[in-house]
Image 1: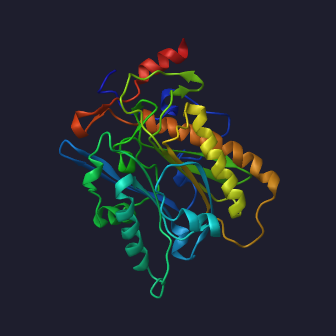
Image 2: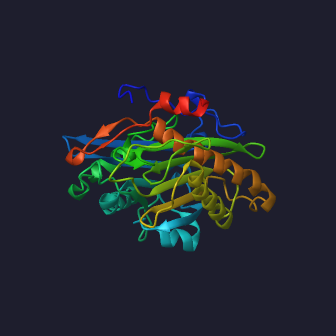
Image 3: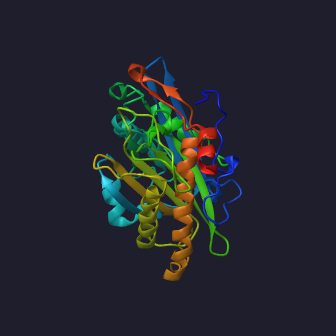
Length: 332
């Protein structure tokens, strides 16, 4: 393994997932109005953590967006999940962080949203905050995330290609025996529609790249949990979005997830479409299902290929997937 290898996305390595066309950036930000921001905390030898914000601009003029949730395995601390499932909507940006920082992030999101124009009389708000456990590479008990870190991720959220790999909420994560992180991808659907996804990968199993197993070195902490955020401009209702979220979890199996009992595997899907008509008919879900499966698989690979070897808490190390070794194995 060459510690100096340059992070590269799957497509930059010649690895193409599926047959459907990505959007221009091959990212969740291909869905118009969706922005992403990160705050990355690397402090001393022991802190490797952060915050990632997925911000739909449509919430600036609408109280909520249609959304759906699917829980592959509920060993997690997702704030806001019950109301999301009950009402089929999100009222805030979606924030990702580390397990024991979830509650500080949720409080900061509430502060941020109550200060927004039009929220002056709000007496209830349902923040959406999800997490994975980065305690192998970061001193998770330190709970270093503060409100200013959350505000920075929200305030700097931008369009364009988001940073991937060991950034934001993916700074200290590990997946499939290697260094995990943040990854994103997109696919075109329907005539003019797009599905975009962003993942926080931190789960166990045996990595598979386009179906080929890539063994990892032995590790005492294989990683657990995965959060997947799906955005689309398709006019789907909350029930349909829950079906898209289910396919997002299914896609984890394509890269080798073992769906361990200690894993918190959550997928959230939301639509930015204006609610100015009926939802799209059921047959329109078929291309969207396929788009989600391909985009999540590629985003998960990007989260690994864009990550860098990281040493952190207690001297623990997670190595990046070796690009050249992977390509040799695929060629053979």
